[in-house]
Amino acid sequence: MCAQCVDPIPPHQACLIDPDKLIFDLDNPRLSLQYEVSPGASEKDFILALKKSADPSELVLSIAANGYLAIEPMVVMGKGPNYKVLEGNRRLAAIKLLRNPALAEECRIQLPEIPAHKDLGLDEVLVFRVTTEDEARAFIGFKHINGPHKWDAVAKAKYAADWFDQGNISVEEISNRIGDSFDTVRKLLYGWKVLQQAKILGVFEMEDRHPTRKFHFSHLYVALTRSQVREYLGLSPSFTQAEIKDNPIPDDKKTELGNLCNWLYGSKKDNLKPLVVSQNPDVKNLANVLADKKALSLLETERDLSLAISVLTPDDVLFMKALYKAESEAKKASAHVHTYDGTQSLYDTALNLRNIATSICTNMKFKHDDPVQED
Image (tube, rainbow, N blue to C red):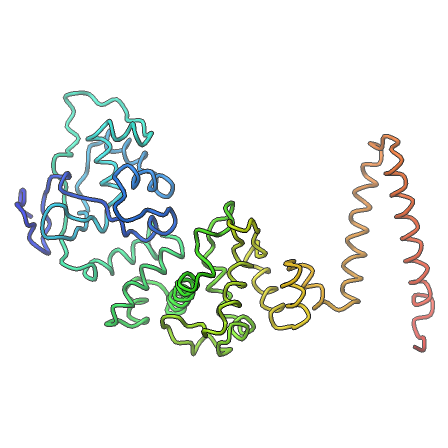
């Protein structure tokens, strides 16, 4: 390792460099996707986005207390200032904040008191320069996809897709090099291709998801493995044979793709909440609805997954579930009857409930007393 490198930093060598010559990676998958960090964002904008996913405040406190420990080099790329930091953006943020109190104030990050004589070791930081992003991918991919600092699913998918799209690496090789299963990487890649197609077609963008909802990318890529969903989108039923390619959904299924994304994620523009609240069982239930014409028609007109599912449920099962639920709710009411304040409408409701229960019992009594009857 050299004591300090002049520009350009020699490739494939660990060197010490002035951190002012380092810039943030504005293409970082997690930040560009989850928190909409746009190209040309300022240092302030980048750090504010970083606070939402990997707040550098704790690292600031650690460096202030112990100094900067240059154990693991930041991975950088470029042929001269400014070098883009591919790995180590959180560390770079902490360093820039400590070196620039005005920036910290703008980002609303409180810096600890640091004695004037204390050297934090921030004048030079250790970096390792690569000549292409591909050289850094295996290390960064393992660390963030299946390692100690995991990205969420959509960030993993973008990272894997950028790698795959270069055309010189297979899904199997990507999965081996980032330490994740072949099946998982295939799902991530396929889901990403469909998500990008939805954006290109103008039927869905992540930014338009219901505003109170985190983007659960897994809902989409899991749904795309289900045969009912695949047939609804005009795809072959088997996901195992599906090709990872751009625009996998047939052109004539644009509307269906928009519907699926809307049901999964809702819409901020149209103020619609998603129908899928949890992956299990909602994705499975949605898939079953898509395979039934009557249930699908009801879903499209009423936008109510529970109502559509009821079409698929046999009447005897609906009766059993409703009766058990009614009993459970009645027990709750009985336990709190002492709070009744004499309101007429509540008393009328209780009388109506009694009449309904009597009618149910009367109808059930014939079958109960004489279970063997002719139709």
